Length: 409
Image (tube, rainbow, N blue to C red; front, top):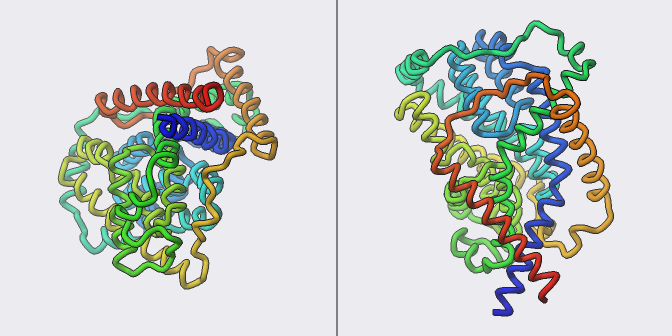
C-alpha cells in the first residue's frame, strides 16, 4: 500500500511538473496562433490556393504552418478550403502542415525532447506532404476526389470573415487585440481536455509502468540499446501510431508521453511516428467520412499512414547518416526540481500576466467586440464526454496524489 501511495504521489507530481515546464510554451504558441487567425482570414487563404497545383501546395503548407494546431479546427478548415476550390493535394498539404508544422508544437517539443526532434518534426512535416503528393500523383484518385466534392456541395455555403481590412491597420486597434483575447480563450477551450488527460497519462506511465512493458511492446528497446535493425525500427513505427490510436489525445497533449517513450529506449523513428499520428486515429477517420464519404476517408487514412511510415524511416536513417540521432539519456522527463526559480518560472510568470491582460481586454474592457469562432469539425459527443469526464477524474487524481505526497508521506 505504501508503494502505491508513493507512486501515486510521484505520478501526480510528475504530471504537474510536466505542465509547469510547458505552460509558457502553450501560452506563447496559442497567442501567436490567435493573432494569426484574427489577422489572416480563411477567405484570404481561399483566394490564393485555387491556382496551379505546385503553388497551391506551397501556399497550403504555409497557411497550415501559421494556423491553429487543433486537429478538429484543421479538419474543418481543410474541408472549407477544398470545397472552395483548392486542389485535393493542396488541402492535404494544409491539413498536414497545420498539425505538424505549427509553431506551438515545435516549442513544446523543444522543451521535452530537444532540438533534434524539433528538426525532425518540421522536416518530417515537409516529408509527409511530399510523400502524400507523390502518392496522389501516382494513384490519381480522380473519381474519389470528384465524389468528395459532390458530397460537400450538399452542405450549406460557408460564411467567411470580412477580408477587406488591412491587417497592419487592424493590429494597431485595441478592438483587434480584444478579438485576439477571445480567440485565445477559444484555443484553450479546444485543448484543455486533451492536455489534461495526456499529461496525466504521461505522469502515470512515468511512475507506474515498468521498463519491461516498453521492451515487450517495442522490440529491441531499453537497456541502452540504440542500434536497431530495420525490422525493429519498422515495428516501432507501426506500434507508435497504435499507441496514439489508443490514447486518442491531440498532438500537444501527447508530447510528454513521446518523451517518456524515447527515455524508455524507443527508437527515434518510433517516437516521430507516434508524434505524427494525430491524423490517423478513429475520431479523425469518422469526421473525414462525414465530410467526404467512407471511401475517401479510408484513402486519406492509407495516404497519411503510408506517408508517416516513409517519413519516419527517411528521418531516422538521414539523422543516423549525419550522426544526429539524439541520445535517450539526454531526455530527463522526471525531475525532482520542476518548480525551482529559473527561466521557466520567470517565463511562466510573464506569460500568465500577458494571458490575464488578453482575457481582461477581450472579456471585460472590450466585451462587446464581436469575434466569430472558426468552424470546428463535428466531434463525437460520446468521445467528447468520455474525454471531459476523464479530465475531471484526472484533476481528482492529481489533487489526491499531491495531497499524499506533501501531506501524508
